Length: 175
Image (tube, rainbow, N blue to C red; front, side, top):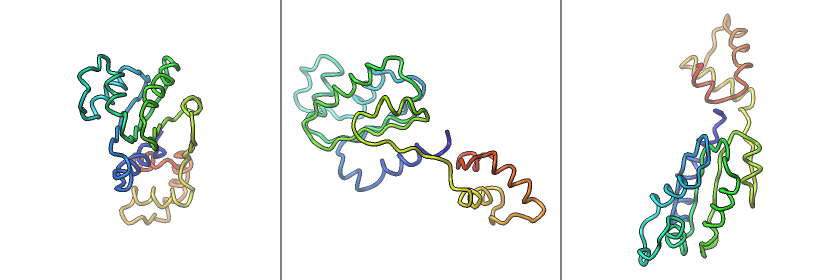
């Protein structure tokens, strides 16, 4: 936690080129349990009604109909666990009904086993803490407005920085 996964995905999500490329962009903060019904309700909420959807009897059919001819970006932020791994497969099946090429699902998680389960196609990127020198600069700016450390505090600050393991969120909080 606190390495910057959500911040990185937010920059991608709000990028103008990304907005132009994906007519439908959906952001869902999943957190503790991945619940297919809740995810589908959120997707339904984010997608605009289209002509002919009145004949759709389920949320799944409605989503399939709304996304059939649209390229979409779906962000599932901060998945902690699956209560039913088959729910992930069901979600992929529903979303694969889109006939528009180039749709994408981005997932953030702090757990390697979740990353392995959701990696259907594509890559995963493991974010680590900042490099020591970059972390030092950031931390000192949070602690001292000018980023300059008084000489008599260097030893104490080095011990603190070591324990924070390069986490930007920890630098902000402790600083």
